[in-house]
Amino acid sequence: MTVLESGGLEIDLLTIVLLIVAGFVAGWIDAVVGGGGLVQLPALLLVPGISPVQALATNKLASIMGTSVSATTYYRRVGPDMRTAMPMAAFALVGAIGGAALASRIPEELFTPIILVVLVAVAVYTIAKPQLGRTSDLRWEGNGHRWIAAGLGLVIGFYDGLLGPGTGTFLVISLVSVLGYAFLPASALAKIVNFATNLGALIFFIPYGAVLWALGLVVGVANLCGGYVGARMAVARGSGFVRVVFVVVVGALICTLGYDVVAG
Image (cartoon, rainbow, N blue to C red; front, side, top):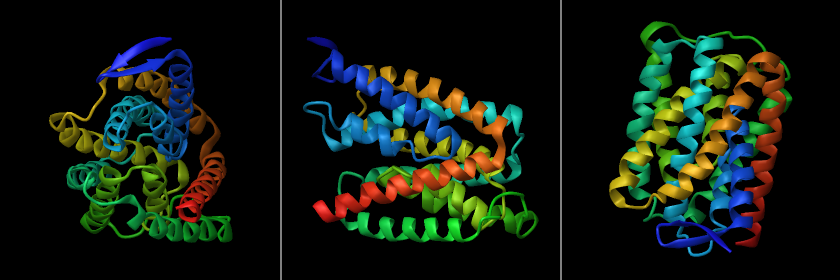
């Protein structure tokens, strides 16, 4: 039985329920450590008749609702350094617009093996250094610190606009390993930047006509609720909790992308 029509697609009740659950889980994961696209984007691709670009664009609409509330929660409770967050977010937004412009032109199979290798290296590095990200030990100072953050934002923002899944994870590990943040403040900064990358992608996708608004708003409300719960849990439990979730999410990303490479 059709319960929702969006962009000419008819979506039944069971699919809507599955998408709401996926949206909530994705919002929770994104708020804690990033990588919610691992859950939400594949779920959207299950909608009969949806194109990959429509799924990617609708995923951005739902995700920006979750990142907005989790970024606000982190800002109020953790107080991330906005002098680092703002230039990083600005460059990430520009990168995301560029990545989204190429999203319908470059086949994903060119990138999946490379991303898989990077994630394996990230997992090994994180597990091999149990003290990594427990406390902040910032590298560089002043403008040098901010320019490196901006460069990281540009590269990861481009990836988010192009593909998306795992963006928050890459943001967190870059902030921890390159700039020296603990996992909790890294997650706080990552949410602000991730909001900007989602916005940048939508700046391209909305005029392109790829966003399925009704579907995106339904999934987005679930994502928003998950983001609120996840951010509060991360703040309450600290960097140790975030690190454990980070390792689990990276492991899940490796398994998913590894299956794609083997099956593909």
